[in-house]
Length: 195
Image (cartoon, rainbow, N blue to C red; front, top):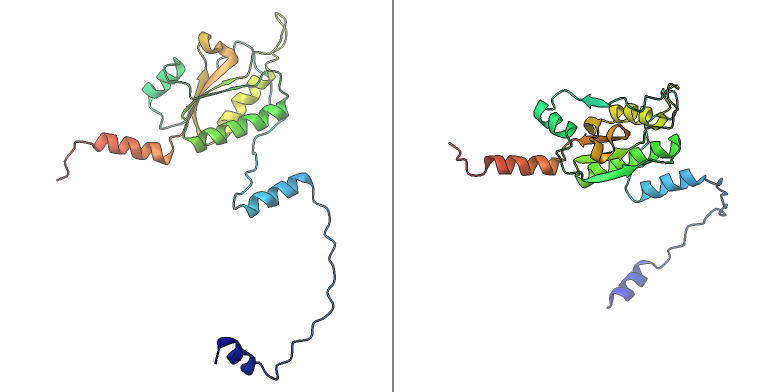
């Protein structure tokens, strides 16, 4: 006796369950952002919300030097960053962007650089356009100064050297990725013996 015959014998006298009539549900139309969020969730990627502000930050003077260092950053590392002695891994130019565009670009740039394991970045924000003796108008410079302090991936930043844009650009030092930390540990312990 074959499997099909055995199955048919077992199913004799079985009646299909009755079903209620199906009702077609009409879903409300989703906005582009909602559709994008659902698409990312379905792919297993979560949408990251940009925490950076796009209003309420005062412009800075064109010649103001940006500087910031989180606790735990060695003075020698910060000095090398300040002097532009690290190789720049990536560069972002914000010229001719609105604050909203720059906000998104800076957030995406820092996030992507962190994912790629990049460490030293250059962001060109410009000096603004101001007449002599006029009020400071370096709007993007003020926002970049504020934004970089808010991002936990940023360990330090400082205005660039003249060859990289001077006070119209900023060097950014990102946190080391887990892979880079592991490589450093392996290099440091190479040749040492364990007792």
